[in-house]
Image (cartoon, helix red, strand yellow):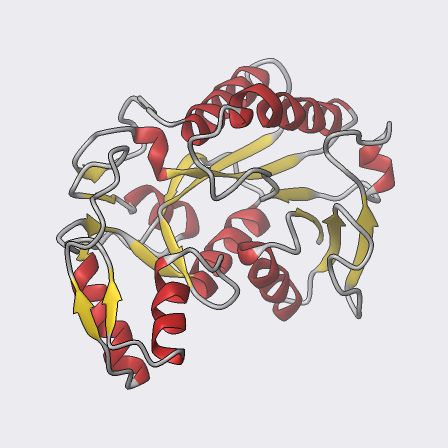
Length: 279
């Protein structure tokens, strides 16, 4: 199968690319700049900017059978108005162009923050109520694609990601900050109180699930990409320390809890398991 992949040079994108190649798929990696993604056996790289894409992108990409769409600028500043004012129109125009030219299947990553300040186990049928700019923009894009799906045929899956960690993550994320503190010999690691319940998956598993959704070529709609198992953030950090044999004290309560997330939420993954035939 020929699979196009946007955001191929990003944190999750690099792992998705590796998983596609492991499965011996033909990959068209979309990069914003030359050299952003290494080419090689099974990979062709197309350089384009979503802010000013060329006409007939679908032809330029070699008419792929499915697009895994990860690209999104402006992170990790989740509060910036540019997500709604700038990024959303770019995303809308790019995807509409591809679909109008004949793209048959689309997998787009969303965010668990689309659910807003809702606690407990979150299932895909719940109404969304995002409170932060990034999630508002993502939620609007999903709604627009669903409306478009009602007008023209294409297979559509909205992969609503929960929390992802692993190699290549942004330096400001929890695990890289912990690793940096250990590397510089710090006695303490500053963090929040750590009592939040969250849903975490390693990036390799997220990549595996995204590729599985894409290769199914299914019309799955919204799908939680999650573990389905809540974990206390403090316990997660302790497990990382133990697995890596790192020794550092935790300075709990140094940072306040984020005001755009409830204290306890995680995903239900029954729909995901049903779609992938693993439930």
